[in-house]
Length: 545
Figure 1 (cartoon, rainbow, N blue to C red):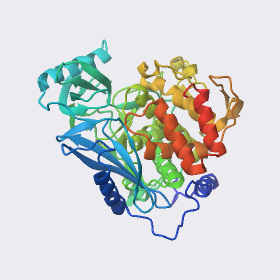
Figure 2: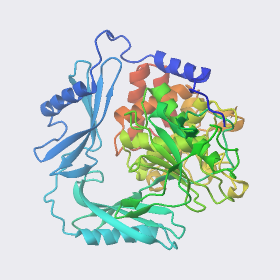
Figure 3: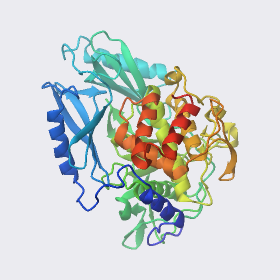
Figure 4: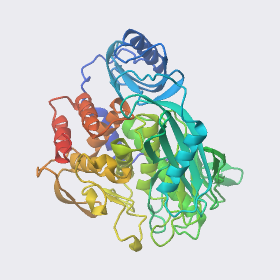
């Protein structure tokens, strides 16, 4: 493929950026000639607020806090996100966001949970080896019939304030490999006094699927010259690069990876990469690198976010991971994306554009709201990746893979029996996902409980009724029989991104997501705006009231 010297912004991207720039905000009339506070100043202001409002935040001398993220609005309004410890133990559900005015004065706070996260004792009655055994059993139960090997579990003592009354608990990450060497992992939360399992969730955030050969046509790539050859490495996007895992897998013990499948950097003699077929190993690398580029550009151009973690640092990709591996995943510990080749009959290589956007958006969620990967919070975590993976696809404006509201449509083969992995206009079309909220939604797998938020996102952007988008027939139905008019993809993205980065916390559930997105819509467009009313109506249309 023929890269250009620089990736130019398309007219569509420029228009999207213009809309984001000109969108009215609640602070639009504020004085703008005063310098915006720096990150350090915002942190200093927040520290003062913590000292002055310790009672509101239930802070005590036994606790400590650390800054996770900082957002400074254009008008100087500041939002500082904190994690919390109790007697040096991490507090699950202890995170909170402090909101400060342009002058640094305290305005309000959003907390993951209420109450003071304290426990009578930090000495466990259940020993760490017993917690490890219980987590290993939970991993085996979650993978029935699988011959797991190299199974290890590493317990960490925490204070759990996310599941009712605070309790001393062991958080144990159990990891193993299946018969093909592919990784499986589960995090288990065990009461350190009684031994009761409090919660458990998959530790590797994944999307199951792949497609047909390679998917995005001929695309521009930024590469790095090295002597007489070129490296598939992009210095303009934080040094992102793509390597060949050579069909090997990671070796991890006690939750720590002792060795990783190689990411042998792809090189090329003439800067024309791949053939568009699986016969050339570089073809999958082209799709992976292109997906990284487009995801980086979407967040930078639309939301002003400089990289996945907002720090300008690039991630990297590994393609050709494992044997017949029907998966792709984002891993915080290596800050990398990993793609399997698929089994060739159900899925092809998992390097489609919306899959890349989905998985890397898990990294954005991890560095901001850190939505827990279980229950309703887990569904919102998955939906966040589906929403932004879809918006990345639309933003790319690639004629070989036009934007639509399907997830993974390029990677599935006829043997899969469905046109895509998920359908955001009618999530239940996949046979498992929920269209409407109910009290049992949190008991579903997070890939299916995400349906409620996916349905909301589609209705907010496109409205109800039939239409053709990206050459695909869509039909947005509602749970309450209402008819809705959408506000467009750009405004959906703006509302969801602000809600995620400013208002949501690790324990946010669907009711909290409604509140967070309404707060975001109020900030961006005003409480009496069409957009604010549309957000409320779209949530009601999926039974979240």
